[in-house]
Image 1 (spheres, rainbow, N blue to C red):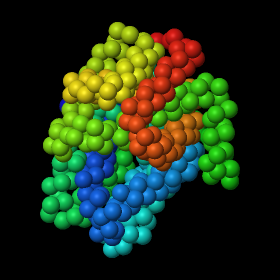
Image 2 (cartoon, rainbow, N blue to C red):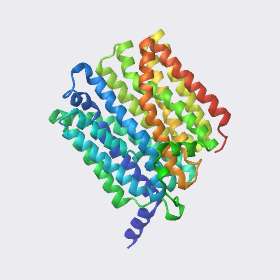
Image 3 (tube, rainbow, N blue to C red):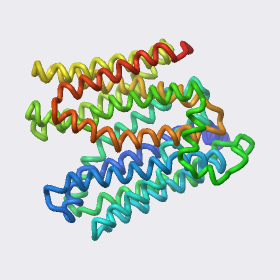
Image 4 (cartoon, one colour):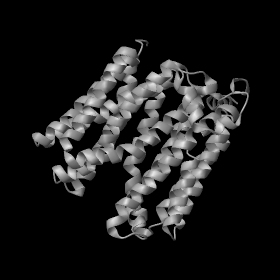
Amino acid sequence: MLVLFKMNKIMNSKKYKLWIIVGIVLLNSIGMSIILPLLPFLVGKYLPSKQIVIGMSALMSVFAACSFFAAPVFGALSDRYGRKIILIISLLGSVLGYVIFGIGGALWILFLGRIIDGLTAGNISTLFAYISDTTEPMERTKWYGYIGSVMGIGKIGGPALGGLLGSINLALPFFVTAILIFLSGLAVYFLLPESLPTEKRTKHLTLNSFNTFSHFKDIFSMKEVKSLLILGTLFYIGLSIFQFNFIIFLKDVYKWSPVFIGSMLTFVGICDIITRALLLPWLLKHFNERSIGITGLIGLAIGLGLIAVSVLIPSAIIVLLAVIGVISSEGLFEPTYNGKLSKSVDENKQGKLQGVNQSLQSANNMLIPLGAAAIYFYSPSILYATATFIILIAIILYARHMPNTK
């Protein structure tokens, strides 16, 4: 009886729910990372070798575009009907998208799979809203850090598993991804209780609720939220320049081989996990979130600046220090940013807020690679100097407009 009582107590605890969320994110991250090494080869079945890059970019862009329009709507729906049902629908949409992608047969079928996945893209924003519903405000940054760390674990292990499965059959990793995400859906259905009580939900849903831009207008009408989202946009622009360009930078400027680049990416993943899972919780015990956040921004500016310098002064040590600066700083700022964002609105607008935030990141994923590529073609050092300047603006905004609260 005592054992049953303790198990029941654990099952009803908030931490039990949160660790389920962490497990779901881990499954999703592994699943989505599995397919990364295989995309060029799958797209290459339908396009000439010189057009593979264009095809992959188009697939990424169509997913981002669909997610841009769908994420705020799904967020608002989760505020009305609860997080659980929307999360299940989003996960099942991803399952269907990856199954279609794996079946393939024609290029338009690949696009269909990406469109379905993009139009049901609400799992990340709904998961973040769930954490906001389930945690006290001062706990959120720590849990957002844990979420980021397990995503890092998935990014390390997923590609290796994908390469192994792809050597058996090119479509197999996509079906495995669908299975992992389906298991996540089952975990949500059977293990995860609803986090948003009926009395805290929005009461009405109108046709305007399906208008993406009406959600932007609503969220940006709040002064504090607007400042935070502008700050986050600047952060993600600077970070995205690094994420979308760094592999090409190492290949072109330093002439590194795939083995060296792969080793660097593994180091990136390890650094990210250590920062979010170990360093961030320790810092939260000794410093306030504002101090940690601005430290993250300063470190990111230094890291990006070092990459710009490494073009003029070639040095693997400078590159390594730059990577440590960028990744560690990302792991410090991003959870504190998400924590502040979640505290800026009431429970019945968490879904809409997180949906708009995810939508902005989708727009970022569409536009930044194109702009970064144009500047990089002219000068890699100017590209990273530009990224550094953008983060410096974010630091000034953070220092001037973010209140100094614990």
